[in-house]
Length: 217
Image (cartoon, rainbow, N blue to C red; front, side, top):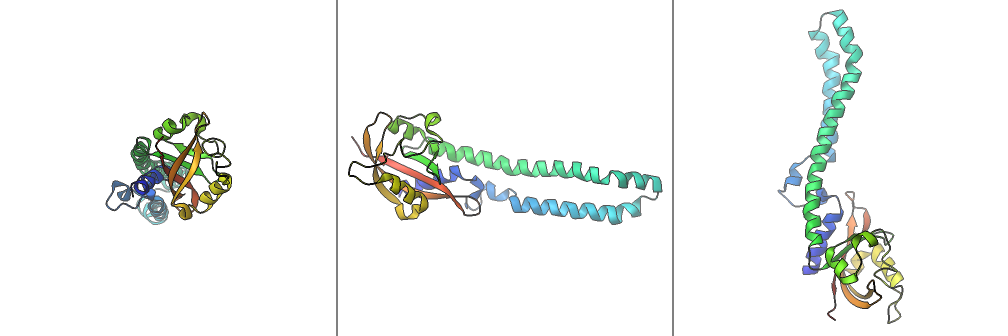
């Protein structure tokens, strides 16, 4: 259960934090993409109706009206840009704050936490992973797990390259698995892993987050 909890928290650090489903959080009170689009649409409707109905009824001077009408498109572009900027900043500001919280939790966890994309390339490597495997995050991020922390073949003869491909394709089949890993100095160690899929906001799988506990000794 501890591994599953840590895996879930680590998963949230890799995905857009607003994909969390926690009820009553500040994130849920922030405007999501759909709300931003709706606000932008309503603004456009109000703008069009204003220049089609309100402005002609208020401005009687033909020359003044012609001037306003000539600049209305540029004015719309300027106001819309500012509005969109404020909404996106409001939206992504919460993302950054939440991401810092979740990443801090994952970075400082007592378990190995790493994430990889669908090609098997490492996208997250916490401090505990650095300690266990002997790699700095800066030197291993972007590299494939095979040939770095996972040998192509286990001492038992099991094909770990094939295993990694299966885990990435169907992480739910490998919620908990134990396999041999390798450190930066070539030492073979055994790690028990808990794996969960990383999904984008549409639910499409984009990678796997794995939480591991190395065997003692």
